[in-house]
Amino acid sequence: MQIETRDFGTAEINEKDVITFVKPILGFEEYTKFVMIMDQDIAGFAWLQSTEEKELCFIIANPAFIENYKPTIDKETLDAIGGETTEMWLMAAIKEDVKKTTVNLKSPLLFNMNNFTAAQAVCEDDLPFRFPVFGGKEK
Image 1 (cartoon, rainbow, N blue to C red):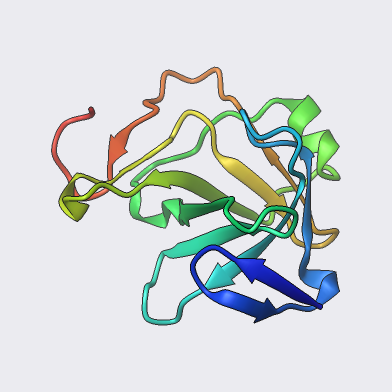
Image 2: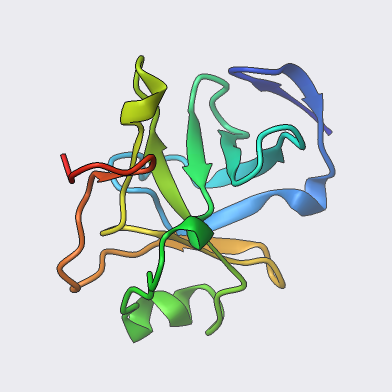
């Protein structure tokens, strides 16, 4: 199937790769269908593109670069995506000065790529909404 994207024009995607957010992204509850677009040249980041609205696209970051990041995820959220998380990503805020880019540690995106469902969790842990990707202090 073809979709229109914000950053890549028309893209050909496999319908089986569409991810359904069973607990939608906060503030964007009316949009539940997304695809993850990877760029081999940009490790650790991806685009989460809505299949329903071409202008709705988030930059997400793999949390592997954050030492000891293990947020507590509530059972309800895990159950909503089928009881397991196969991938976790963080919403990123890319700044004009890229060195000031931040990620949201408080509300990770959880993916179960076995059934292509996802949810945004809101952790009870004391974690920042704006954690600097390239070091420095929390903003």
